[in-house]
Length: 176
Image (cartoon, rainbow, N blue to C red; front, side, top):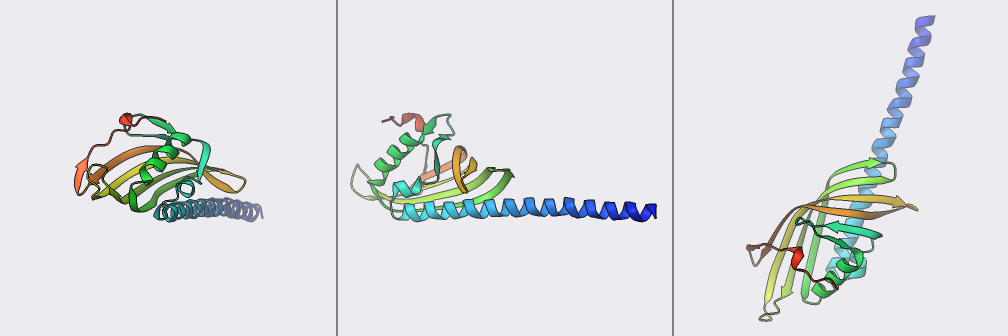
């Protein structure tokens, strides 16, 4: 009788622990799906050259850290995009989540992104093809049922202009 009781308690405990693990997996899958949907909205906004739409998912206190150690806040990023978008003819962004770790209402996302742009060279008014490929680590937070990106740190970056690799330094960018 005692053995039967222990087995029953053990099975109940296993079911509770198992359902908790399944619920956590569901939460992670839901967070991944929601954030990937946000990336799709950013891509759609980029195709329309809609800077406001591209930045709609950023928290008011968002910060981005570049490879060379420079940190930008939302206002500076918005100014950079508004300036750059003026010479863009077409833009396509694709972002894929490679890893997501969930802790309550916070998520750490590792992703791979590619930005393809056709722009107009300010030097000679000819088309230029710019491709930027990189990986980043992002911190997201869910507030009021909405995921907002709080921080992003670039981990890798490769940029080409008309097929030739270029080195871009964010330290050269003049803040508005």
